[in-house]
Image (cartoon, rainbow, N blue to C red; front, side, top):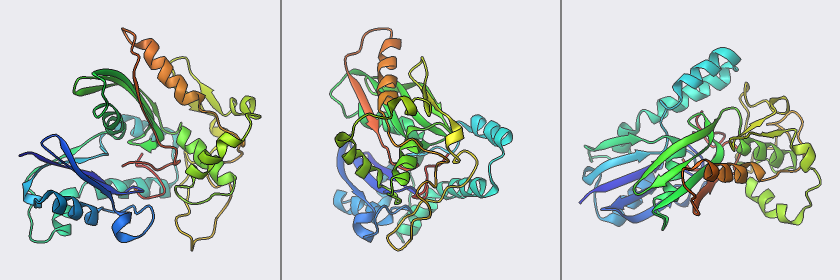
Length: 310
């Protein structure tokens, strides 16, 4: 028997799942047990639940997969730090997130007193985890795969080719450019300040009219390779630590706390353009696309509720 524990920790909607011999046994979000919406710590209760449902203990777990790899894109992070000189608060927050994720083995044993973890921890790059979760459970033997979200491991989007039991990442969009950040800024500008409120704007979007598409094209710049860039004159997340309101007891700080000036309309052409470009770049035509998108601004699957690790 091979038991694999998947962990989404220190990020909004922390969760855990357990796979045994290739079959998903159970999965749960920590908020279900703690009764705190979008819990963003270590999912100890969800882990306990998964082990209990599988009828095993921590010592029976051979592998733990964590959906963040703090080593990913390290060179790009360093260059950005030297070139842009972001605020000390932003840098300290990122360092704290990195330190938390380095203690997974100890946290597992602390969450389950008396049990010992003797397996291996695998830190999976954020978007590779997204792509794998879309492709590996799909019915396709071969497919293009696209991931678009806020940020994770210093990237906001990735695309590649899934074949058999592997996924090859062929392109990414890096910090500070992000459709998730754009959606977060617009969501807050419209008066929805809390983490996770983006789904409300998504629900309202079909009832609107595309009156501001041309203006938005000045904010989101599409690239020939299917990627995109933001006009950073409209945003301040690139150099400052942006607060994210996270609870009913906290009053909204500002309707535009992630943006400088915001155009009140968003288009999905960038994400779809990435998908189409990926198909055009393939050596053969692929009629299947696995797409994973999370427009929660700086937070989806897999850092504190305010932001993905960068």
